[in-house]
Amino acid sequence: MSNAYAGNFYIPETQSLPEVELYEIGLSQSGISSVLSAFEADASWTGNDLNTPMMQLDEVYTTTTIVRKNVLLWYYTYNQKAEREPVFNVRYRVLSRSGKANTLSHQTDSASLITATITEKPLDYDYKNKNVIRCLGIVDMDFDISRATRSGKYYGTIEITITSY
Image 1 (cartoon, rainbow, N blue to C red):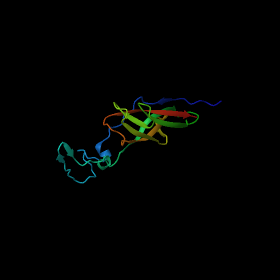
Image 2: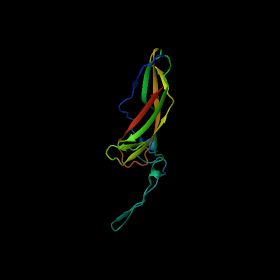
Image 3: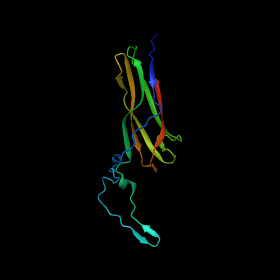
Image 4: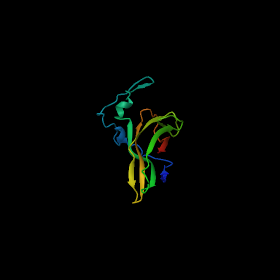
């Protein structure tokens, strides 16, 4: 009979990521696109109509993907004197508040979505002290904001399925 190894999982209930900064979507702090050269918009008024040139979203933003690297989603603490190192198979899934896969939804408008992709990184190990080791579940997260129609906070649930063998 082999000895079982025991440890403790820790998964935070909420995970808040830093807010998106203007420079991450190619805008200066003033909100002006950093790739546009100076331009003037002419407006003409005929009767009740005001005609102005329209700018497309891709003319303003240089990117619609926001990246968050090395996000710690969970860890497992175990005793170094265990018979063998634990082995994990981990799967991640992101769900919006309405249950739509791979998306986050706006806090008040469930139709405004951000596509969320999780890229799993190899498990990392952190020696807490000479007897205790932490196995770290770290991921990179990419968010495509091209479908978002509202500014503000976006929420979702990350499902983590961890199988140890």
